[in-house]
Length: 131
Length: 335
Image (cartoon, rainbow over the protein chains, first blue to last red):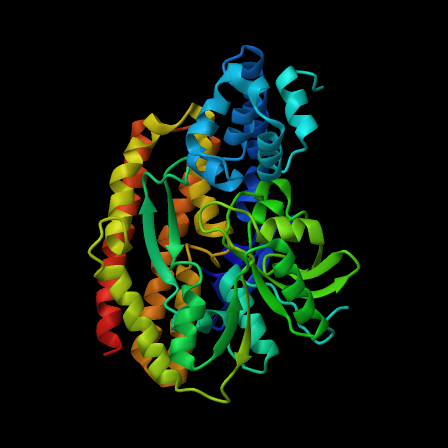
């Protein structure tokens, strides 16, 4: 790739690309991320829709707040179980919409650590108290 | 305390960038593409169903940690490396090294790094950065993906270093403890290239190397049936662009960086054939970039009908054919 073809304007996210300079040498070039420069608005559009969609599913009792964050953070049940240190079958049980209130405090704390979201926020998410 | 003479530099990739920076700091003059090439960093693997991935994905480099190990074998560099059972032990060891003025690479889950913008934060346990200081409860960090050193609270660092799950870091640290005055570049380059060709061409596993690119080409037609909805499919298709261009590859899924390595290697060992191979790989990389731009475009336009997936598939088969031919000739060039 020629140097001129690699350039993107994106101060928020810089990357290094290896490009062909004018003298024919291949060297590193610091530039903006192409996808962030051109498609970040689309990422946030989809992200907002996903959040709304998942919140609406919580309200309809189709999922609970644990699954909300599981999907949002692109985790699988196996991965969440491994990260939280909770047996997979127990995670599956916790994911059932009606079982949210039965999740013990220690398990909730473990989920909170993995999701990097305070326990109170997960509970608020479940009860629909969020703005 | 900040390690004053540490020179922060952006790099294409976190692992090769951290290794290069640490070696440069220890007095070894070596470039990131040379580290990447000698350690046989170039690769391809497609994962259609994995317990740890919510959607099919692929990688374009060798296994995390392998670069460091291969480099040790081929250059004589020795890295001190250690993992830990508890965050307390991990923090104590790291703090001690920093207090002694030893810049230290750590393995982390990128999701817990506060300085990373929200759209880049994903649960990936194999991000590497170099800790270059500590003031109070804040580490000073040299992360190859950022133009300047950044701050990271101790609590976030511990979370990131001790995240669990697939390929969990276990507080892993490393730094060079021995750097040879010189090494046999020609031998190291030849071994690095031969192994890379072997990985790409000869692994008898259907999702690895060139076979992996072909499996990706075949299986991508199934993606629409695996997505939750159109926006999810669009997101996953656009991630092809991120994985090839953005997620620390130097462009075109490391193909541009490997081409740079071949050009540098050609000059070092006086093999003009490698220079031609470098040019060829740059052109192959242009094809990968064309593919990733196509993926971003159809994802954004939600133009995700079967015909577009067939086009993506054709482009991937094209890359597989080109790379198969390329690596066969590269292995002959280096004999």
